[in-house]
Image (tube, rainbow, N blue to C red; front, side, top):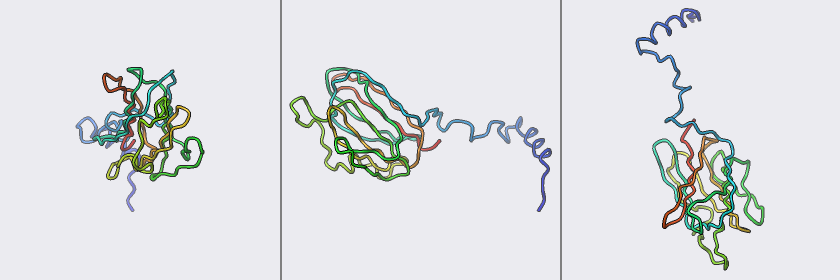
Length: 186
């Protein structure tokens, strides 16, 4: 086996970098699609009176997106806790909710899926498959954890513990939306 001395390898890289043959910045150090998100918990707390109206998902070139449509008194929404956990638990009962994927993203909203009279504002047809994410790059499953005492929980099965971001799009006539984007890779 022929060994190239480390000094010779460094000299070759230094000589080829200015010619554009080898980039001086490794592709591994540049962010994927410009994404600089992390995987740490994202929380925001404010007094809210919104209700869950719908849950939907979409695919993008660099990430998969989960959107929660909200309705209520305010044009904005501000109470959520989104984080990776070992296992998500159902509201009320505390029963574990295993989901497909190597990582579990817990989504807790301070927004009930029922109105003040107890009538449902959103009821998934299949609580185990709230949104069809088959064929998505990152999302594996979205499961309904319930709505209890003004809070709603969902379990999102993710391919791996990948970077994510959370933000709120203020509402107009149709209410605010909570958006969760999960990158396809680091």
